[in-house]
Amino acid sequence: MKIKVGFGFDVHQLKDNHPFFIGGVNLEHHKGAFGHSDADVLLHAICDALLGAANLRDIGFHFKNTDPQWKGISSIILLQETVKLIRNKGWEIGNIDAMLCLEAPKINPHIPAMQQNISEAIGIPVDDISIKATTNEMMGFIGREEGVVAYAVCLIEKN
Image (cartoon, rainbow, N blue to C red; front, side, top):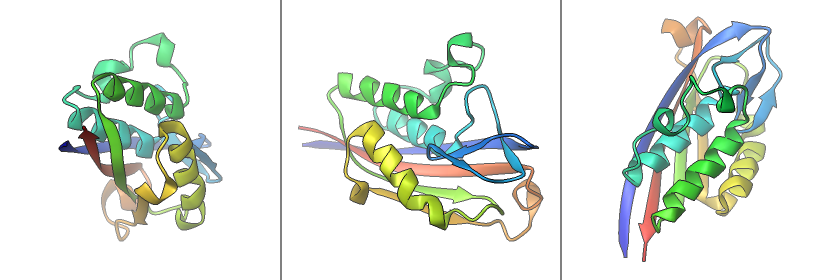
């Protein structure tokens, strides 16, 4: 068996009165992440981790932010397309571990729904998807609620 590890990172600007999707969940908040797609920072970091592990470049290479095909699209679809790409190379997903960094809103109540959305999109058990959240202790652009960050690592395997 061959295994590989991938790392992903994503950041999005927060804007007033904008939808806020994280892990496929639309969060109630006075600000939301802004981007070409739905700007789901968690799913973008996971896509980059998976693509990196399979040596398939990054999310921007496959889903360009200048392509109208991806404008406003759900990042769940981007994740599903990413999984197709890595499975076409013979890889299966072992697990995902992700960290969100934002001041508000509180993420913990939404983690089970996020895990379920990711599990359904990529076809691995919820127990193999870890999502954690932290703040930036009111420091920097995250502390000022100007942006949101996500990190992800994954393990992929090939028999």
